[in-house]
Length: 353
Image 1 (cartoon, one colour):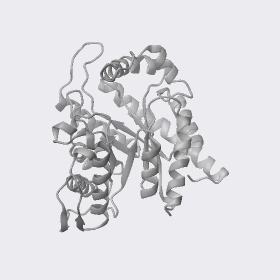
Image 2 (cartoon, one colour):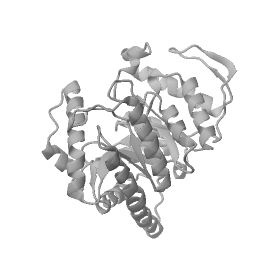
Image 3 (cartoon, rainbow, N blue to C red):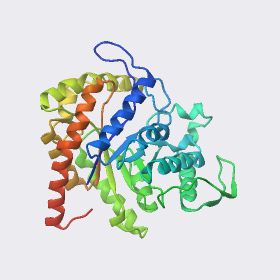
Image 4 (cartoon, rainbow, N blue to C red):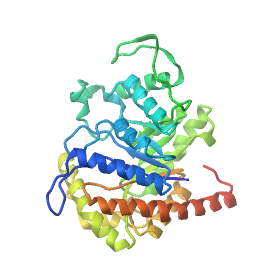
C-alpha cells in the first residue's frame, strides 16, 4: 500500500490576509515539500499541470526535477499531464529526463485535465477534446514501447521511423491514466493494461468500487495480469494533531478555492455544512488527526480496492508551516498505521488487489 501527496501548486489569495504568494515562492515551497515527503518515508509525490494565474506549475516535470536530486526514494509523477494539449514526444522526453535525474523514479499520469485554458493557448479546438486525448495517448505509448517510432494521426505531423531520446531508466516508463470517475476512462485504462488514478473529491468514496470492478473486468478481458496493475485515489485533505484544529485550518482555503471554482462552473457556494458532511467517515474529504485519516484510508483500501492513496494538500493557499506539519504527520504517523493494518489484512484475507 503506497501513501503519497499531490499538489496543484496553487497561488490563490490568502483567505485571511488577501495576500497572493508569488509563483516563484510557491514553486520553491513545493520543492521543499517534496524533499520532506521523501525524508518522512512517503512513496509518491504528484504535481499537476495548469495554465492559469492561480496555479504556478505549468511544467510538472521541471518542478519534480528540481526535487529529484535532493531525494532518494520517493516516486515523482505528474498529476496530471494534460496530454490532449501537449506533444507526446516532448512529454516523454521530459519525463525520461526526470527518470534519469531521479534514477528511475519518474511516472507520467496522463489525463484530460479539469480546465480548458491549455487548449486555446496551444492552438487546439475543444471540439476535438476526446479525439485529441485518444490519439496522443496512442502516440505516447508507442514512444514508450519502442525507441524508433512510426506513427500517423490527425492532429500531429506523422513520424516515420524516428528515434525519441533520451530513453528512460525504467523500461517501461510508468504511464497512469487519470480519471474523474467515468466508465469510459476506466475501461480504456483496463483494456490498455495501464494503472488507474481516480479523482475521488466528492460524494461517497465507496461509490467508486463498481468502477474498480469495471476496470479489472476490462483488464481481464484484454488478457492483462491484474497482479501487475494498480489503482490509486486522489482526494483532498489535511492532517493536524487534533481533528477540530485540522478542520478549522483547512476550511477557509478550501471554501475560497471551491467557491471560486463553483462560480466559474455554475455551482452553488461551498458552505461549512457541505465541508463537514464531506469530512465524515463515509465522505470524500480526508481531514482530521492521524488516526482518523488512517482509518479512512484503510476503509477505502478494503472496500474499494485502491493500492495507492494520494492526499491532495493543500487546497487553495494555506500557511506553508501548516502544510509542512501535515506532511510530517502523514509520513510519520498515518502511513505506518495504514501499512501495518493493510499488510496484516492482506496476509489474513489472502487479498492482494
